[in-house]
Length: 148
Image (cartoon, rainbow, N blue to C red; front, side):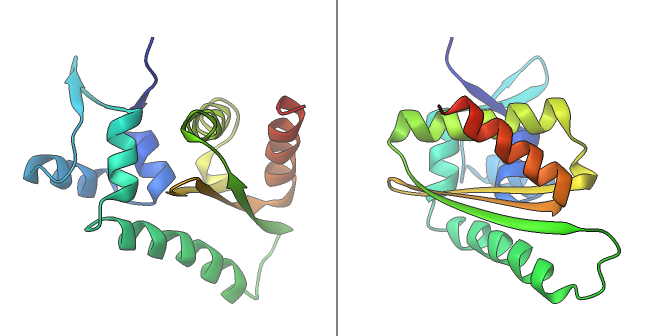
């Protein structure tokens, strides 16, 4: 079965709001498929979201914003970490990486504890994770234990 992303997963990975993505769908800027009232995006649809010249700067700004906000917050009340993974991956590996993080985050963590961004530029994939130290650490352990 072909991999599909929900509109919430696309919003989570890009940092764009669900409303913004719906507006892009309505204007024809991006494509998706509505099934049983739920917007779904194929891997190709998601790739087009990431690489669309009209959208790409917003996605990059959202990722940069996560990093800037982390650095600018000098009054953290708990241990926090921000991790940036720059990975070289073909399309299949890129899909596996995005799916791993989407599934693992959605099934194991509250988004209140974690910020996740996914960017792709050709064969370069960037994953940005920011949040509670133990959450980011645990997620990274799961990611790397699955790659061995």
